[in-house]
Image (cartoon, rainbow, N blue to C red):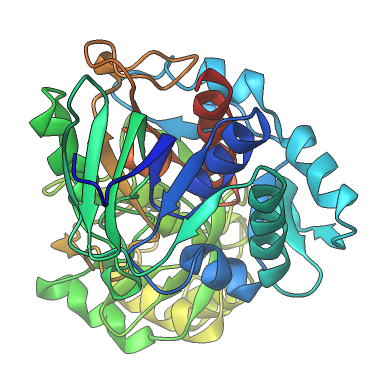
Length: 393
């Protein structure tokens, strides 16, 4: 440690949702906290989320809404800090909000209100904000603890909280620093991969991209995993929309994405009635009653019955409810809303987010192998894991 090294109780790396929350909680507990952010602005992902209105939590949040190699890990932190706790904080600051479908809560106005609230909470705790802290290097400090060197100087503390996020949306400054630090200190990392991400179609299925812009309510999923009844959107590269983004978090290369194009409906029943007109025109008419017109025409051509017997129509009906796509890849971290995988939870204490074998080291937020569904769940994990660490510091 040099004479220029500044001493704190806690250094938090990353001023995103988890880092801001953790720093605020620790600061308000009397800890002297330095919050280092390599961007020139805090909470950049918060600001763009939810179309600029920040889907800040979900009323129906539970451990079942998360993906992890250890599905039980998130339970403790999520029970410690529930959606109602964050809502109480939002209400104290007079931030107007509303509920959309499926328990999703959004700001009535700008996501900036959430960032300003978190900054105010950090201010209440006397947190020192250090922006543009680039070129971060972490090492051990003399006498224990950690030393952090950066373009904004050197810092030392007995505790280090890594809240550097994942690899998603690199244009906002995402890096793999959290994973590098985990490995350096002996923690394992579950291979990071894009999640909540559009899927790309290739081969014969690339013809679906002719329908770019078409959307419909479907049920989508990967075999053996959760299924999601929401909208699909056909893009110029493949498939997107909430149903596909949700399913993408479970998808692996080579697997099928199975889509029910008409959930809860028996589309061709009328064609099977005695005396019914069984023609291609009648088929298209029936499909247009349950699907957007362009999609109905495409499905009629690509998945029409092989004959007009009841057996052929029943087989066609089954196909409508089990349409198998074979994506060739995702659109990558550039388009992924979050990163799945991350610091292996086996190396962390679930109630505190503290590393089991490295005194004073914590990992929180997206850097950890806990990934939420679409709809406010990832922010709730950020708040909950940040509070868990903040209260343990």
